[in-house]
Image (tube, rainbow, N blue to C red; front, top):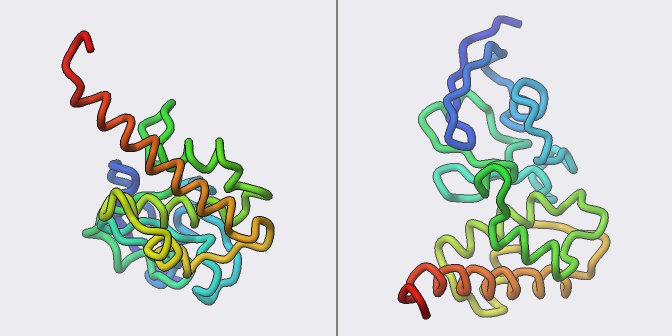
Length: 168
């Protein structure tokens, strides 16, 4: 297999790798960039465990050819918050118990992040729809929905703290 230079912007960093042109984005992330948060669950885009954000939109990396995304902003679960910090989405899942075994959690975090970035106050029906491409065999989904609701509260509290007058 001949290799080509693939340039990807992942989690805000320009990364270059030599890989076959047809290598899947999931494999590049996990094998070449050591970003193992995205999981291989199905290899046919049916479970959501491999989800990443591409230009702010959730995409399943198990069926995406990496070389096709060279001009895109890719964010993995490792990159949804600055190093050493947690995004409100991560806080919500950790506190509300939305992560059981943890295997599907990265995909749910990515889907939730995309939802809240575009709709900071979704209804339960909008939450269900946004997460409908993700499968979980452990939680029965109620804890996941509660995690999203808590993430919304945490995000709103952070925003309120940013805009509150000093000394109040």
